[in-house]
Length: 378
Ligand SMILES: [Zn+2]
Ligand SMILES: [Zn+2]
Image (cartoon, rainbow, N blue to C red; front, side):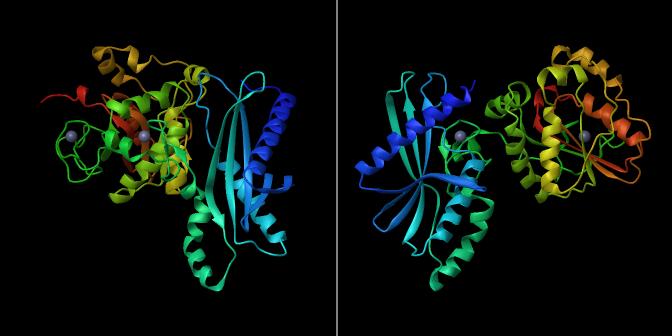
């Protein structure tokens, strides 16, 4: 829970005073404090060795249960950068370079300073545009715009450790740990090896409504934990992370879609959980593939959870129907149906059949994770 506004303001001001003292002790000259424009603000502007420093101060009260040094949000980093650039433009004489620093201060409940961490250059510095430097700058311009990210420190969504890769990616250790379905392709329904993830299985042709089905990773180890967190523990940002990773797989393989649909969640469950992870995943994919998300399924109030059913009940639930909204017409469309986990495929089958009935020309399936243990043996 956040502290009331005034207390936070007081805490912030105190932190800034401490940061100023710290900087002065290290021979910085303080130029301005709390410089504000509409696009952003700078807590402290300081000067040392012909270099300019934009220092952002974060003050937090110590709590045992959270990570103390949490760095900055991307939004805040962007606001700082905007403000820094504007400040730079106002200067009559340009210094050698301008740097973005971060000072994080942890205080006790009673205001004693417990810890102070000074992170230098948490994002790319600004240099004056000298002729020879200009080319260099243009080269990195793309980096500067899309990912300030490149120079920021991020928490790995897998292990929580900081890493300096791109935003929404895993650190190299976690990347290795997750069982991606990268190069072994097979029919998710019957296990027949296939050439590409979206190839049609000849064994299952006619038995399943889709012409191709693929999954991002296996439901085991770290991958399973991630999907569980995404499903049950409000880790909705994983939708972004997994979609970012999935796009690589989708772009590499033959795959076409005009619209994306997600397996709907019954109203009661979505109300309790606050979100539908399949829908979040679908929207993140759609954003990156530049196609719309469609909602053809009629809302339902209640449906028994798959995870609460045994195998027999799951098989029976194959008969369960996904009613469509009235006047849904999908004629001639290639649809990508998205869900979080592929287990028996029963849910996807009945939803897929409904979409086919509404006229969908071609249906492909994509899920975050795949559970191999329920695969039927022949
Ligand atoms: Zn990691
Ligand atoms: Zn098959």
